[in-house]
Image (tube, rainbow over all chains, first blue to last red):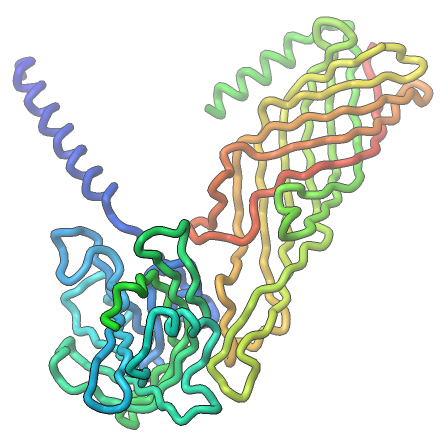
Length: 219
Length: 221
């Protein structure tokens, strides 16, 4: 083999190694840390790990993950939480907190049947960022109010279908500033949830840990 | 790396002069981990075995030291939360963190104001050591059904290169010596102390300060 041929193969090898390290080096962190007391679930954390995990009828579910940007949609890394205020014509608006979840054994793929878990919380029309931040260490529904929290599950990734609804409860354990103050300020958003939908789907031991930007909500 | 280290140690030992007086010492005492002092009080009971041999002259010795430190204490508490409205929303769960430390190191000892009959000060420097630290975490009386611990700790096993130093005083007792030493040692490159899968912990690698008393047995010429 001539020197030119050797150089050619060497360059190709270096290129392949470079591409490999570029892809693996950019891979985001999964941050799913198994919890031995609840097999299949991640630990309950408040570090902005971007993880939600729960049992649905005793089977573990977590949010899915995409390791590469071209592998999407819908997100790069862990599927994130979505917070939306649904403005209504009634006395209250609804704050919707939504996660994608998928069975834990297929958590590395987006192409497996997943579900949405949605929490619907009635909030006053005047609901603001300060109100949301004041929910730190609050459990909903609160004992002394008449408000109800609904939880819904939409199965098989069909987000347009009507979710099965039922009573739920959610505990905002941490809504804490993340890192140095910036514009807009981000917060660690961490807590617990549970509920029952459609009389047959039981959500238990739910825990979430995300970073959110409350100022960007559609108040 | 290990092969080079072995060759260095063997060649150093073989280079000692034939007329040297060797010594071996056993010491124990108490140590306190200063690196975790803000969060935890980690005390240890160190047991050290040390071998020394004079080098160029009798005031400079080569040292090989191994120390095993047994954990004494190490308590803490983490917050746990529940959705059950019939229970308090938050409770503290007690945890114990027991760390066992093992350090092997080589270095040099220099004696000051050398008067073997009256006693003398010395300084030890250990530029090269290998530290193994094992941390074991246990939660006590944890209601796993109703509560979830936030950011729960896990145990970890950790090995790293280490540096150490000591100052001490040697008091002659017949042909042997009583050693009183104040030691400091720490692993290097431990800034990001994480569990094996990258999970952050509430405690750091240990860097103990030790106060030990030992008996030094001289042998040879």
